[in-house]
Amino acid sequence: MARIVTIERHILETQRQHPEATGAFTALLYDMALAAKIIARETTRAGLAGVLGAAENHNVYGEQQQKLDVFADQMIFKMNDHTGRLCAMASEEHEDIIPIPPHFDSGKYVLLYDPLDGSSNIDVNVSIGTIFSIHRKVSTGQRGTLQDLLQPGRKLVAAGYVVYGSSTMMVYSTGEGVHGFTLDPGVGEFLLSHENIRVPATAKYYSANQGNEKFWTPGIRRYVKWLQGIEGEGRQPLGHRYIGSLVSDFHRNLLRGGVFLYPGDLQKPDEPYGKMRLMFEAQALAFLAEHAGGYASDGIGPMLDIQPHSLHQRVPLFIGNRDLVEKAEDYIRRYDQEWVAAYLPIRSRQPVMTEEQAG
Ligand code: P6P
Image 1 (cartoon, rainbow, N blue to C red):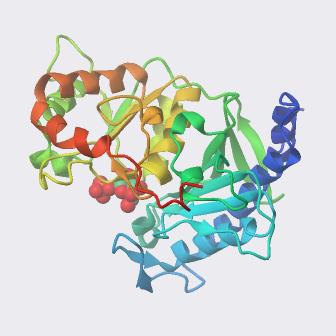
Image 2: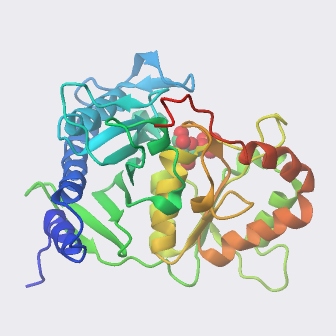
């Protein structure tokens, strides 16, 4: 009989290799797994429990919040606010840093999360996902500050996602490989199903919203033609797969090989950075991609080396097989100087923090 490894057991075994790691880190990952099980249950019942339909309030991007969004956001907060493991949190659904309530202890990690990415897909029963990442506290004060959140991805201690699809899977890494667990609803446990995931050397797919082609820069247009085997000598075309739910597109490309791209463009010259959120989507997935042998870039350089300047900073995202992502950087270097000139000054902005926020 195959070894049955629950996520708890796997986290503990991984942590044993880090004697300096306290149980807090293990428990924090366990808490995320528990939140995922509860969100999975609600997601499955979404069509039935009257959870569907837009909530009256909107999120910071002006997007109508789906009730399941609100539920997932609150679930993750309530699972983590009292444990004493975190000194602060940040959510894609909240404009500012989420402090730990003063009557709870403050801990040595910060948690950033997108509670339910792709929420516009809820009503049409398309897979959606939760994305999370964990940084160590670096500020000197008692409680967490913006300085603890605005760290480059290279400093992450862990990241992961949950994909609520045909089955519910949780994929995470603490820097020791990328591991996938599938939820056995009968038992209510995540069981190890994909140990040490590596991006396949040969890619099968590219993922892009072709509906945006009219707005793409010259370099991106040529790059996608290259992916399609139209440009470039004798290339085999990649299949086009685009679900419109980042976690699902990323997950498929991680397992089958491929590249996901959401480029910036010059529709609005002062907003050349595209749609993806650095702190709630791109950093976490870039951490996983690199630890699975892949790579992630904003088209200029490694996503993990970008020094964030604001919590809701958006970045272009190219992520998947390293050779495919680096090819995107080549095309941008060669053909998109105008776009680069518009984007670089924004990319290199310094964080704006008050004395207190700088910890
Ligand atoms: P578009 C969902 O809203 C999301 O943030 C990601 O999950 C997804 O990859 C992307 O937006 C889809 O965006 O503009 O192609 O619909």
